[in-house]
Figure 1 (cartoon, rainbow, N blue to C red):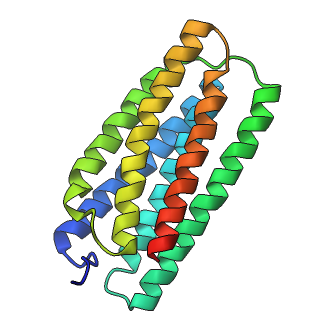
Figure 2 (figure 1 turned 90 degrees about the horizontal axis):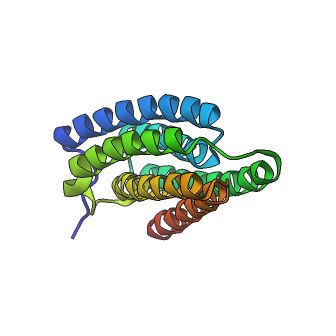
Length: 189
């Protein structure tokens, strides 16, 4: 049975909407992460940027040959691996250098990001079982919503403990989520 390849015009409109939401949330979270001094928010912002780019790539290869779509999915899987390593390295560096992030700003922005990601997941749920490109869009959006909940938990931990400990822990966990998604996409490719 062939898998959905994304050719449905409704799917394309959903992807454009999700691209716009991800691009906007990248800007919001990167600025907020910088202001809050939060690696978890910056890691999530980077994920929004990666989603914006990879969803655009998914849109670009709809209807292309299987080889082209597989190459695009391979690129997305490898880029998730690179992002996981960057987030992990950056987290280790910032844990040693930086102080306690702003828990209130972390939590507030994480709630906004969760709303954007839940909206994306709800729009994409009917397309979750497509080819490697379509599935990668679904996996990224689903994982992002999970990541936002974890960032909110980190914000509560930072606030309650008065220490930065939960923030880099969550950033490292997000790096693991990126790596796991990468493996799933690469396997399907």
